[in-house]
Length: 369
Ligand SMILES: *Cc1c(COP(=O)(O)O)cnc(C)c1O
Image (cartoon, rainbow, N blue to C red; front, top):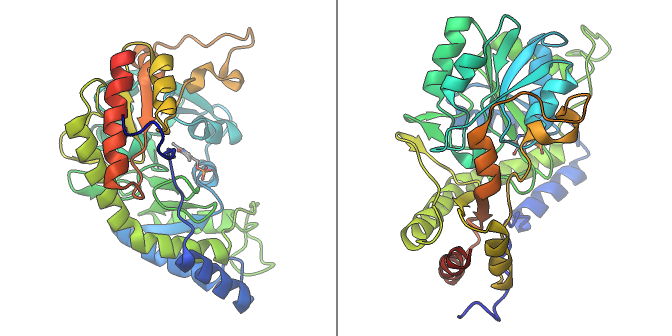
């Protein structure tokens, strides 16, 4: 097998190229380093990705989720419906404002939240739904928005993994009350650390601008209690360079996924729902046999791989009951996905030789599982 002595293929490869370095140095030399002209330009340019919505840049994706919940006035006594099969940040943001996450199951055909489960979880305390566009696959926003309208709930899209994804030609981050993006280095584009809230609601955008900067629009004329969740101009300048490459990178991710789909036969390749533009933050297969054995074989073959996420949020320590047990949730598809999934490299830096090794390795590892 060609892969045995070959170089290790990393599961992700964040780009910090000469253009990113030049942009950072240019800002450092300018002396205007915090929430200045670069942040304003980044917000304006990012709006093109989300059908012209208002964009508010922050210091992380988690801040984007937390500050949005805070801006909408949610807190103790409020329930937010969220999938357990996600990164902990989704539920953490809810707990950080003192509200309670209500965990619901996913659809096996998208790894995203099941709209029927969402509808069944609505109570008199529910204030919002937080769908997660997991792995770059849009959640079923059409059905989720119908449920939200029926019950007058806010919808906060966790789009941290889905820059440029779309459903029925409409971009994620432009469906709900707000969309929240992350620019962490391993995401489809980055700003070292960073986040963005997107919204059609000008009043919400203004509240977010106040909240990210001590409640001030005019310096020392504080209007409300706010935090410091500002983005630096260095981060924004790097984000702008990355944003210009996002379309090409996304096409490359999609082409890589298409190649892997056509070659991998011994694992279940990623599902894609109808009418969906998947941006493959992760290329996530299912291994129905011995996953540990499959992962070990992949690693031996020099193929980076990882499980996102081995422990669903409802089983993480902060979300257990006082007795230290998971709550009374019914999440069979979440449990099954957590036990079966493995993500393979799909990032835009892969060569054709890498892709062939990944496909060949996946078939060997899947066969051995
Ligand atoms: C990365 C991520 C976040 C948090 O973004 P940060 O920028 O790391 O704070 C939130 N939700 C999901 C699904 C993520 O993958």
